[in-house]
Image (cartoon, rainbow, N blue to C red):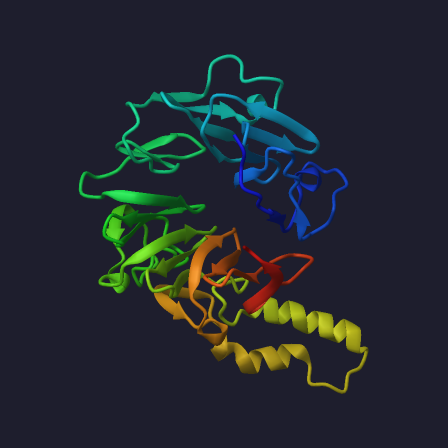
Length: 325
């Protein structure tokens, strides 16, 4: 089955570098598609699962191995959850990257016959899967989710009417309820009530949602500028870099400058905040990494911000030189 041509760009560590081997650097660089093309990607730290025209394939540090018979993936550094037509199964990472999926899986759950519509992983009938034990969690009957995303300590669900629910750890404000306590059950994000959402994303400890009108809302931890708000950590890093490059003591010491600006730094945003993008751009898609954020606009432009180790993206949305057509 032919797959429409699509260019996939990778930023950050490659699977080779994550495995301790030489790699292409922080990117952006192309993810090799091959003749079958690539239609979807599920990344983990040291490996990635891609969907090609021939089915799923796992890649890591030079390894390319097909995963026949599976339709979707949910990877982590301990386990890989795969969903097929009849079951969802979790395999240990070593088995997923080995010669074949052999032996007993760490977990499995039979699935009923497919309905006429399909909800993507991690959603499963009656609840959702996680790529770590306990692997399956039931959802309350009142939560009818059409999309669910997982952060490091929290989860977000997009309801049938565009409402947003959040639960889990809340110590960094990632739940959007205006407080830093955990929530054991899905709770409506009341600050977004009445504004239908079309997409949600969860990072390590921050969250984002996109409204039907294309507005972007963000909340949670801003330690590395992942909310596109002023960040003390990034300001200190830039100040150190400037000091090293200047080689002069005529300027005010950077720490004094930072102390004067402390009031402007935002480390936690506990309520959803509307983000003003350049030129009033409308957002089509949003994705959150551990400490960075990326959006694609309706015009096909890619914007990124947050932490990038060797390549600081910035505390404000920065246009990457790529169109996502």
